[in-house]
Every structure is written in structure tokens, then in C-alpha cells.
Length: 519
Image 1 (spheres, rainbow, N blue to C red):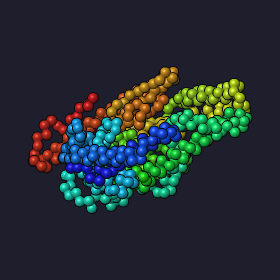
Image 2 (image 1 turned 180 degrees about the vertical axis):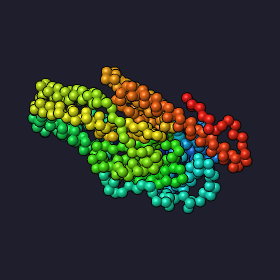
Image 3 (image 1 turned 45 degrees about the vertical axis):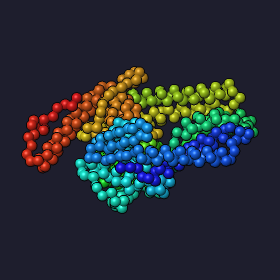
Image 4 (image 1 turned 120 degrees about the horizontal axis):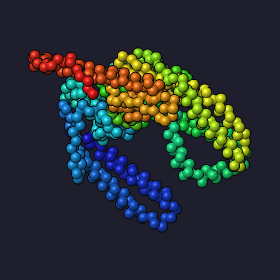
């Protein structure tokens, strides 16, 4: 099968647009000298040539790109000069995502992205197919992964942008507004680190008249004011990004997978196979917790666009609603978390005290050795905050062991609870820094295929007693081996019963209930 013919002018337009931007940037940065400007006729001819070359290349790309969905693989053949053939096993496909911006939606085309287990990026991309073809591929790959047959009839009327069943979750305008209010995008810091040095001369001219006033201000006032401005900018940017990403978010359950749609400008539609869920993550920052709200992310082994390996199942809702939906995906009980020992709280107090004293010393140095003046001793107000922050950090951490799940909770400013089924665990390790060893503490790390390794989205029992960490690691490993063996035995029985139904009695050989330690 081929891409949609409407993809030819769209991709050609993308190429020309990128070239136009490049020319515009060169023209802007080249100054006001017009002596070297080409004649208008020559410029027009160059534009026509570029458009013709872009269109010709895209025609060749279209003719040389084909794909085919079989019962076992998704095959892609591409390449204009150098041919490339790929066969992607369907069992490795974790998610099938559809993306379309406003122009693509107006043209009736969409981009299909195939995400596979263990991939750090999109495994394959179809740019672009019709909207109905995108939905057909999404549906048929799901059917084939469930052992069903693909539907031969690719009638466009069968594949619409919305399923007929009621959604499990649909974000309301109130929830979308609250999400924008509590979202803070700290990535604005990286933008400022680049933008401020670039525009520093211009900013200097703007603030020059206020320099005498700035010199008279206390460093405390400047610091607090700067933090408030930075937070306001980060909150506005985070709110705008959140509203744009999750506008119209709906989540439905179809067979053994979840399907979501979201986005205001760039519209996403994707699948989350329930049998490939690695863990669940319930997250809420301090503002969200203050109003009793949170979010739920489903972590798979595949790569989700813009979100690593996790995809939002509930971007923002009341906590009870979030937990209820999480328990409908994985049937865990309400946890009773075991907190770290109290000596861990002392460790946090020492850490925060060192930070507070550093701020006090910095304020004193600014007043002592720069033209700025003010009450540097006002920073001493941070010292009484130290025990409060230590208590908050200690109370926010914990772990819980249940029959089929291990849970871990961490973070106060942004709290995250991770639910991991035992049969999804890859490794269980303990680690301790030099500072933890001084207080006989350790961290237990429960790694899954979708966690991204230590420090990623894995579950961590932080700052627990060293002996408890070793005991807990052995217990989790034992339950992991038992759960994996039980699932293997179950899958063997299901395959045997399926063969018996189709071919008659089958010799099971050794007892299917006999399991061995997978390690």
C-alpha cells in the first residue's frame, strides 16, 4: 500500500517553508545592505526552481514508499537512491499513535507513528495517510495483537475519529482550567538561560533608568521578586502548554486496550494496550494536592510522543476519580505506606540547613561586597523553615507491599505514587550513597521495561533501613519470580487449550503446572 497522494503537496510545502525560514533568518541577520540583493526576476526563478525540485523529490518519495500489514509483521519499503526494507514484528508494537495538525486535518491526512518496546524514539512513521486509513491501521494492529483477524473492508465510513461507546474519562472545561492553573513548566529556565544572554544588551538599556532604584533594593527583595516573576512566567507557559496538549481529552476502553484523543492544535489519537502496561503513576504537585486533584499516567515499554514512555490516562481530575480509574486498570488496594525511619528526617534537616546557611551567606556577601544594600539578615527566616521542610519530605515518602503489586511514593513539591505489578519487574537493586551509609540507610529501586532505569520513572523506596532494604529486595524478587512463573504457566495452558479446540487432543508433555525459577 502507498501513502495518501495528498501527502505529496503537503510534504513539498513543508520543505519550501523550511527553506523560506532559512532565507528569512539570513536576510534579517545580514543587515541592511541591499547592494547584494538579487534581481526580482532571478529571485522568482529561484523560488520556482526550488518548488519544482521539492515537488519532484516528494513524488519520487511517494512512489518508492510502500507498506504492508501482515498477520505477523508490519513491512515498510522506502528509499529513493538506497532502498531499505523493514519488518516490524507486531508483538513488539506497544502503541499506534495518530497525529494531525490543523492543516493536515483540513486536507484529511494524518501521521501514523509506531512505537515499539525498548525504543528511545518512534520506530516507524507514515507521513502521511488518510484519516480513515490511519484508523484502520490502528484498529487492525490491535486486532492482530489480540489474535483476531484484520478487517478486509477498509471503507472510510467505518473509521471515524470517535468511537460510539461512552468514554471512561473526558476532561471538563473546569478541570482543564484548573490544570492550566496548577501547571508550572520549569523548562522555561532553559529558555531564559539562552534568551537572557542573547537579549542582555537590549534589556540593559530598558532597565538603565531604574538602576538607582535597584541599587537601593534589598537583595532579599530582589531575590523574592525575581522568583515571583520567574514562577509567574513558568506558570503561564505551563498552563498554556497543558491546555493546548489536553484540550478535548477523552479516554475509552475497547477490548483489551485504552484509546485516547487529545490536543487543540496538534491532535493526537493513540492506543495503550493493557497487556503491555508496565506500571501506573499517580502524580500531583503541591497546588493540585491542595485542591484534592491529581493525574494518572500509564507507563509502557514503548516511546510516547513528547512524554517518554508514559501516556496520560487522566491528565487532571479529583484524586478519588484518578485512583478509581487506576484500580480499574490494575486491581491494587488502597496502600498503607511504610515511611522511612526517623533518622532519615534528621538527614533531610541537615541537608536543608546547609542550603539555608548557604543562602544567608550569599545574601551577606552581596551586601558586603557589592553596591547593593539591604537587610541581609532577613534571609534568616529560612532557618525555622528547615524542620518543616524536613518533616514534609519525610512524610511524603514510603513504600507498600501487596499481594500482586509493589508501590512507592516520593516527592512533596511534586508527589508521585508508582504501582508496579510483580510480573513486570525487570530488576530489583539496592543502592546507598556515602551520606546514606553514614546513617545506615539505602534506596530500593524496582526497575521495569518502561521506567528508563535508575532515576527514571521506576519505583523507589528511598532512605529505608539497610537491613529492611535487603529484606525487601529478597521479598520482591521472590514474588517477581513466582508471578512470572504463574503467568508463563497460564499462557502455556491457554495455548494448549487453543490447540485442543482447533486440532483435537494434544499431548501436554510435562505437567504445565510445573514451573521453574526464571532466574
